[in-house]
Image 1 (spheres, rainbow, N blue to C red):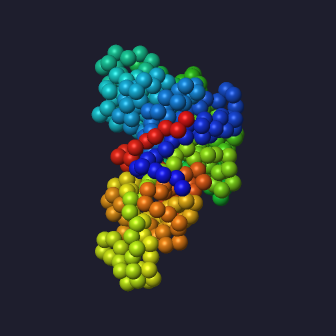
Image 2: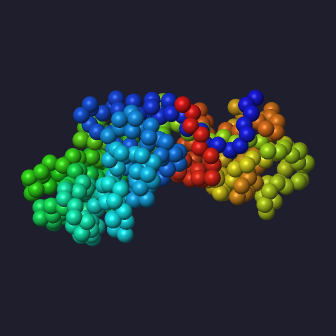
Image 3: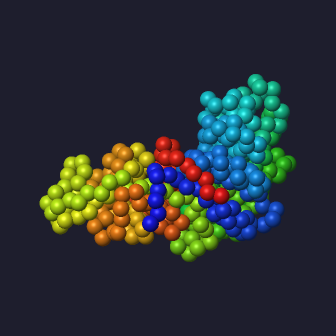
Length: 368
Ligand SMILES: *Cc1c(COP(=O)(O)O)cnc(C)c1O
């Protein structure tokens, strides 16, 4: 039996490397690879992961917010970093740390040009985002002329890329919609190139886009979830290895008699005599209360143990009546085998949410 000593999130760099190599093998040798390391590299460890991928010569990083990019620069990352959703209040900081903004509407474009001019910048690298159907961030396609006329008279910026984001790249029932997004994107790019006489790089695909739309890789792809080992479908999953293992330890075991209850609000009531294990991980660590009351589960010595009662802030209780285990045994919340997607699906969510919820108070351990 495995012995653990505390709750840890273990990160497997060999798995990361294998996922990276697999994704690279799906794209042409001229296509650049942008590693999306927002939200602490999907809950793993943005600095360590970025450093590792930088050594593997990844072309670009993407983060969501400026402060995430600043943290990477402070950790010694020198690879270009795209900030997907920068706020104008942080533009000075963004320039100071050589981060590259996504500019997605006239307000942020004008504001960035103001601040770049004030900071005496010439040809500062920026990326223009277009909305092709996700209806999240991005200029609509009817704004291409307006964007081009601003870009044409602003020497303080240099547009390195045009990009957009797919709404349903993992969904085989949405091929028609996705194909339409790809066509809209091509039309935007052609018009932009004509009106500016330039040819910025184009990028559109996230992980599922890479896997499902090989004709839409353009000049660069942006992958997050695939690097961390999730393929977004049963069919694709076998090509990936989840890099993160969340494990904990049995702190105590109670024998609870028939009729007794467990935890807050007496939410679990034993209908027969039961053995209940107490684990040092709770909703403050990212295990939502939704996982309580036998929705979620963990694995102890390869046997499944349902979470019983309400999830507490720092503790969950699991039913180990049928599990051969002792205090001090290791508990797997998810790993490469019992993966985060399966656990996430037990409460109707996705791997992305479970992974990025793992609180910063849990120690990250790198396994090389
Ligand atoms: C988060 C994000 C990605 C990465 O998506 P995955 O599905 O994790 O590969 C790519 N592009 C944009 C704009 C994003 O916000």
